[in-house]
Image (tube, rainbow, N blue to C red; front, side, top):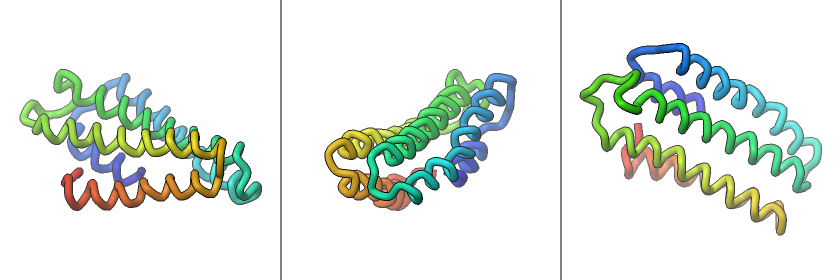
Length: 136
């Protein structure tokens, strides 16, 4: 998440109050990761902590998507020569893990172990996205 955040700001060349607020909310959800992770550590294999963790991840991805869309929309905070394919690839690289998290949360209502396995798909997707799709 930190790497993705850093890479987004490589392309963001300007700032405004809107970006600051979106970034604050984005980082607020990142700061909650230790809490939601500790719930899983204390209540292993229970569904509620998994859902809390999943919602935390989902909110991070949603905020990252909002941040990227806000910054790149109408070239608001990026250079006009940014490759539109890059903008779309980054949006896809945020949307796909979001869908994986939603799927994992749904599966957790049936089987928490299987839900953790589905979350592992995010690692596979991250590897593939960086190597094949060249998501920066």
